[in-house]
Figure 1 (cartoon, rainbow, N blue to C red):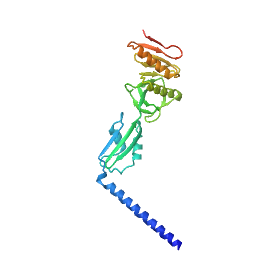
Figure 2: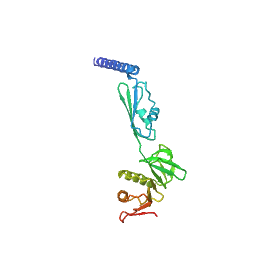
Figure 3: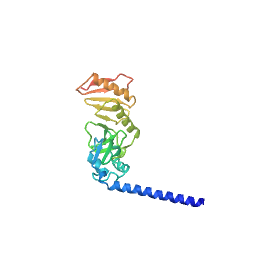
Figure 4: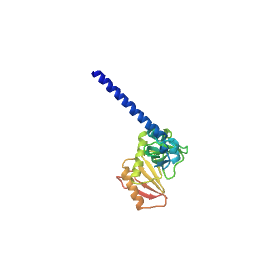
Length: 245
């Protein structure tokens, strides 16, 4: 008797499952063909260097398609393959709007590749965002030689520790809103910065925060339009400032 009851219970559960699955399938089918859920507007938010058209072309999304006809996660993954994209999310605003929210990587420096005239635009993690001409207004880094590079990959150099120091200094510069024009790392123990019209003999990376603060104080106190220099290799000795005659 108990076995018969168990069999009836199992058949009832299977029937309920089939009914629920059929209802879900029917609802999904109706949503998939309903014109109410056709995408009428796709909004791209957060782009700075990229264009909305670039994001949309990579996404594969189109006005007129059904709002349920794609995987938001897979679409976001495709967009995230663009080098300038740090992260991306896609949200549905029912019944017919999509929003693509992009967070871009921020370019921090143009790294010169030897004497080729090619510059690699990198972000604060060392990823290569683009290759070509130096970007106006962006710090130019010289004195390091990449072993290999590819857009969308992290820059590889002979001495990773030196490259990490470069990235560290760019973070210090941003912390104090200090914007040198160029940084020469030919001798990592004797770094030279250029901020027109000054040559700044920065020395090693040690005490970078204090050095940048001193530099800013000197520039504010002695604004110059002639070629000059700031000697600040050792913060424990008095920084020197003078004109280049």
